[in-house]
Length: 351
Image (tube, rainbow, N blue to C red; front, side, top):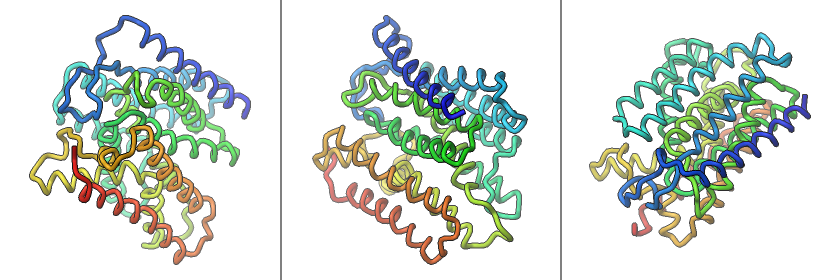
């Protein structure tokens, strides 16, 4: 099974790279980012936004081949249904927004539908014995992460590389633990698609992912977050506040960059009386650039920050006997990172 997964990762990377080259060299112009210095993207040059098409193509081919192969098991059927529906409608919602500039309400409706589908297929955050609390947290998580990943897509290679730091470690630990299922295959092949895309998205970018890409990654990361972070530990006995704290800490660690960026932007814009959902050059990424870092260095710093957080989260998952007094020490990292990124937006002059 391991050699099949490795081969799938290589094929996915090559397919993504070749498809990206095809789009760039082709004469396609129906999905090109228009020049507009006031949008949320830091660079205002016109660039093709086919990233999501690369991701979705790899996902679709991989899922269908796996589902109709002898590797498929009854347990994979529920995963197939949940992901096929939510990923598809998220991708096409993002594609519609890229083409038609749809209103925010349309996005929220689709995101709520995605959350509802996950709940109906049993993908629910288990944080309380009271079901409606679990459902509420699940909805907030799905909608929040989909918007957070969308907001993070504001500078070359940021969203793609940060997504990779979350998805790839989860996939590798699934392989190491011997859990080779549809989830594992999807995470591995999407990681390959991201690597192929980064060939064109690393600064200076030749291609963007667009909303069709950020919405795809948003729902996939929300799903992975639920199954392998929120619910990543074996529940023993009754739930308690310490258990809940461990869940929140793991999620904060693994998603430290997108959560810090969204929280910072939301706070700063609300303090100025602006809408958090209107694009601007006031993200944590931008302020690191204003501080003097190049676009590539901004990406490198944020990759390192998030990768450390993901590794710490995995420690909490795979060493469940860690004393809870030590667990709370892990919370220091996301708190310090958020504080530093937020303070930087206050002490650095916007350009």
